[in-house]
Image 1 (cartoon, rainbow, N blue to C red):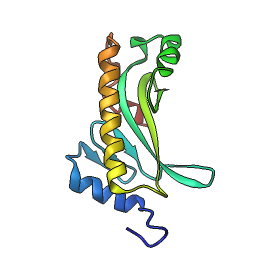
Image 2 (cartoon, rainbow, N blue to C red):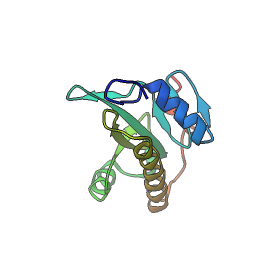
Image 3 (tube, rainbow, N blue to C red):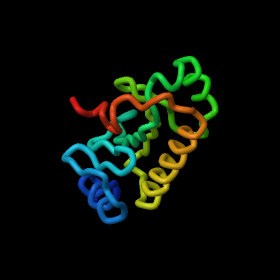
Length: 135
């Protein structure tokens, strides 16, 4: 890791993921497993965060009110809507993150997304997985 408080850089995160997981895709902005980990992340209160997104199902599969009510049952993360696709979203603070924390977050997000898919009977998926990123 780099010397700045042992906080990993995006390049280090991406290289680590390449070595530990079979990737569905790898771009300059993202590493794609069965969900997407956007490069660059976001900032909250001046701290960098990595945002993990997992594709769930089409907007037509779950009424908005039901999505908000279901959101209240989640142990962590959030249900978000992007371009007619529901996603599971979770943030990880990079400043104090260890590799084990990143791997655990990825596995937990994948598990929670799978659980959500099982609990909501999709009526069709709309655009293909990650279609919402095809701008």
